[in-house]
Amino acid sequence: MSALQTISNFKLTEDHIEEFYREGYFYAPNFITPETVAAINAENESFSSNQDGSAWQSNAFQSIEKHGATFPLTQRMLTDRVLVETFERILGAEEVRLWMGMYAVVPPRGNGLEWHQDNMYTHILGHMLNGFIALDHISQENAGLWIAPRSHRLGRQPNLNEAGQHRRAADPENGMPCQPFAPGDAVIFHRETLHSSKQNYTDKVRRAYAFQVASANCRYAETGKLLVDRELISRMKV
Image 1 (cartoon, rainbow, N blue to C red):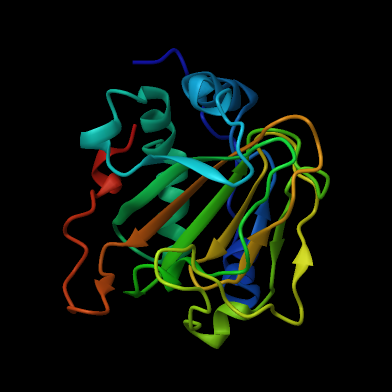
Image 2: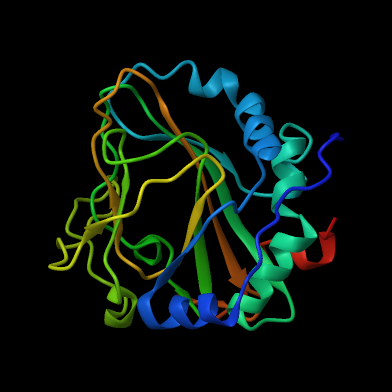
């Protein structure tokens, strides 16, 4: 499948977990190795090199079964034992499910996404986390991420956009830019933490990998059913 051996050297601490629940996010420097960054970019090169529009775009990875053969290096990262056990510890869960992953790019001179929570899309009850991994040097010059500390405590926010558009929440008063990221750095945040990305002022595409992971006991708000349609990556650890 892949010559990659070490996906991550990140060491999760109790301080990280406490910060996740208190502030709604924490920084994770060196979340994945330089070799992993290079591998994920290479696997998505045709997608990232064909971005000439003005809007944020993503290449979705919705399941190991559907997309693992096409993106084996991405599968290797998303099922890495160190990372999966990190997700389990953060969520306080014996098992976790992959909600989705996506290779996300902002084209040269393109725009990111407005303020939103990912739980504004499909409403899920229970503990979930998001990850944003920089695959380039990312700062406010190239569509850097913004985040609103403690906004996860406000609960799910109403969508201000029309149907068919990306969800949009009201601009938070305490929104702030994330610190610059080196390739492989990440920020891990709560599914209801408000976040956005701004304009890419450079002539190069901005590349990142975003993913969402759920505790196995999460349920759909509309039906009350468990997320049994999502794969248990805890049982796929490599």
